[in-house]
Every structure is written in structure tokens, then in C-alpha cells.
Length: 600
Image (cartoon, rainbow, N blue to C red):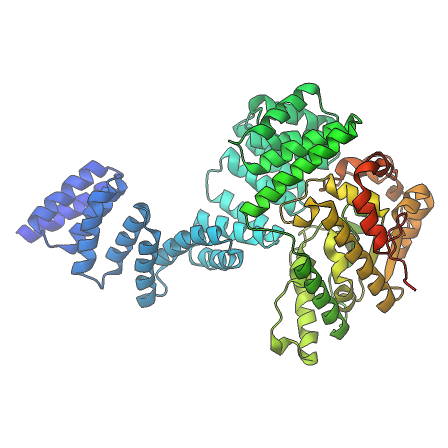
């Protein structure tokens, strides 16, 4: 009789628990435990209800007792793992989950919880490859788990697979009731996947949920800037700053839209933000760059240069905190390794059923955005901006067994497949793509072997103007070499030496454009560029500024303007650039063209 009453009482608790009536569930579970004090199931269920009621300390002894009494029951161990997770002991939780998986490798509940807990640790460790692998596995085990798709999206985007990240994030949104923040985050992922249209739609949904959400307003301002809708973009910047006056990213966009010509009130607010130590260092850096640009726009050159120096000092402070630095010796060794590998590579056949790549290589701020804008206006070209694929290939680990000649051909073919892996899904009928990642000049030899049908356009600009322009920009934090003019000069010399090497060993393979000559004779130079890429001339390439496509770079405002060299700033900063000029000239760089002079 007592056993039947026990079962009935326990089942009554389970029914209440499933209905969310935790107090009723606890009353039933405690009554069941009074009838059968040593019953493992009653202990585990009572502990779980306490846990769900926020009483973790009281729950844990009961959860542990259940496992101690019946260690072979994985359901009880799963509840214990949940208890450890919710009481701040993720390592203990993962150990319990590991025991379950060891005896029951297909236990979906245990695997899902294991992946969820491990994702936090992997993000902290910045182990993006493992995060991505876990995300793939988790989505297969439980395709209806929203967090699985979000993990997959994060792992993909951190590895540069932006299209795959956007697809995974879209699945996450379908499985949840998205917030304004999540729609805004999805828009950011779509932008990185070169899908401005979907980004705008996501921001529309976000704005419907909360028209005053600052991050959404700032994100929309950025998209509108990329699309060339500058007046609308400025309106959204102002709306963002009305809601959140300390939102520095909106000031950064506003500064670019206005080419540094900010109002006195804006500059005053930026000074206050730059001095605040309660905001992220990244935002202090961005605020200081915007102040420097304002001084530059007003012709206050000495104040501008001093402020750029202050911005870079903050950036170096951030680098020290995050244990990041520019290591010249390491960079030299890495590039020497790329050159040595390129000399041993066989040439493979061009991949089939893929668009023809047009690589636009050169130093940052050398005019690569203009060249891509001209080509991107062509109906057969899809502009892909700074694709990260070649950067990942250039850092690909190569084992001893892959160094053999027979293995290198297969490796090249694998790299070629990887390069095309994450292209935008809709190329809009184009059969050519551009890739203007600024550091692809390092891999020209590899590109020539791996993708023999690729066009390689090299853009060169006055070296002093180029180096100063780099110093005046806020690059992302991984460009540690941009924080000292001496390091920028050193890198420019290495670039010029490497280009001279590629031109020597790959005669006729590079289409070299001198930026100043290109803009001075734009009406004739643009058709020559298009034809050099194997394309028929199309008149809209001369009016690329009118193209509706997004230009996703911090040069987007300049790229929508009339074609002009933009040179002359170095002369205004001349008194601050003596060491830079001396370093370039001393290394044999022609100070007008950037060509590496041949030494006697």
C-alpha cells in the first residue's frame, strides 16, 4: 500500500513540476521522501525542483545522494551536472557529463549540456576552431537547440567563414523569439558576409521592436554609409547619440561621414569620453582618433599629429594588456617562409566551376578601394572586399609529410577549395570576384601557383602619403604594426622588396598601377584596367560612385567622391615626418612612386 502511495505522490510531483508549479512539486517530492527516504529518484527530483526554485545550496546534497545511491543511472548524474553548472562549478559539471558520455556516447541531453558548458571555456580560450567543431556536432545532435546554432555562428565568424556564420545565425533566430539586440547582431554578421540587403531587413525588424535602441541606430548608420546614403546615415548617428551620448562607435561613423569636420559640441563630448576611464579602452582609442581627425579637418596640424600619437599610445597600452605586439623578426621570418614555400610549389590547374578571382594587392591606404570600386561596377564582377581566406591559407600549418613535392600539389588543391569555400551565396550573375585584402601581396607567389587563372592587380602610391594615411587610421587591434611610424616604414620597405621579388620571378604576372597616374588619367586608365582583367569595357565603371552596391571599408566616403589623388597631406605634416622619410629613403624607396630602387 505504501509503495503505491509513494508512486502516486511522486507522479503528482512530476506533473506539477512539468506544469511549472514548483511549490506544489516540492511538497509532493518531500512527501514522497518521507515515505521512502532512501529512494534515489525522489532525491534527484526533489533536488532538481529546489534547483529550479533557485535554492542551489539546498539542492546539491539531494542530487549527490541520488548519484551515490545509483551511480549507474545517467539521468540522476545529468541532474547533478545541471546542479554543478547552476551553482558555479562548470568543471565539476563537465566531469559528470563526461562520465555519462563515456558510458552512453549518444546521450543527446548530456552531449548538448556538455557542448553548452564547454562553449564558455572555448570562448574564453579563443579556441574558435574547437568552438566551430562543437557547434557542428551539437546542431546535428539537437537541431532545434538555439544555442547550438549561435555557437556554430560564433565559431564560423571568428574563423572568417562569414556566409556560414550568417546561415547559422539565421537558424538561431528562427528557433527563438529574437530581441532587438539579436537582430542587430545578425545584421552585423550579414554585413561581414557581404549581404547588405539582408542586414537592412534585420535592422528593419530590430527598429520595429525598439526604434530607440542605440546599437541598432549606429549599425543602421554604418550600413547606410556603406550604401552611399550619407545624409540618412548621419541622421541615424544623431538619433543614436540622442539616446546614448557616450556611444563612441556612432561618433566614429559620423567622423567618417563628415571627413573629420565635427561640430564643436561633438569634439567637446569626444574629449570627455577620451578622458573617461570607466569606458572600454577601445572606445577611448576611437574617441581620440575622431578628435585627431577633427583637428586635421580644421588644419590644426600640430594638434592633430599630437592627438594621433596619443591615440596610438592608448592602442599600445591595449596591446600590452592583451599581450599583443608587432614582432619584426617574427614577421620577417614568416614572409621568408612564404617566399621559400612559393618557390617549391608546382602549378596546378585552375579550379572548375568557380569565379575567376581578381586580387587587388598593395599596402593599406594605397588606393585598393578605388580600384575595387571601378571593377565592382562591372556586371560580371562581384566585389568581395577584404576576404580573410588567403590570410588563413598563408598561416596554414604544414607538417613534414606535406613538404614532399607529391604532397604539395594536393595541398594546393585543398587550399584552392578552401579559398572558394565561403563566397556569398548570391553573386548576382557575376563570374569574377575581387579580393582586396591589403596583406595579400605577401602571397603573390602562392596565388600564382594555386590559382593560375587569377588576375593580380598591384596598386602602388606615394610611400610617404601611404604611411601617413595608415598612421591616421584606426585599424582593428590585430594591426599592431600601425602604432609607430617607424614600424609602418619598416613594413613598407618589406612590402616594396617583396613586390620587386615577385616581379622578378613572375614576369608579366602582376598588373601594376601607379595610383597617382591612374587618377590623373582616369577616363583612359579605367578602361585599360578593366581590359587587363580580361573583361569587356562597360561605361558604368567610370561612374562607379552611382553603383548601389555596398562599399564596406572605412574608405567608403572617399570611394563615393570624385576621383582625386588625395595627396598633399604629407606636405602639411612634413615637420613631423622626418624620421619616416629618412627610413624610406635610406632603404632605397623612391619617395615619389614607392618603387624599390635597384642598388648598384
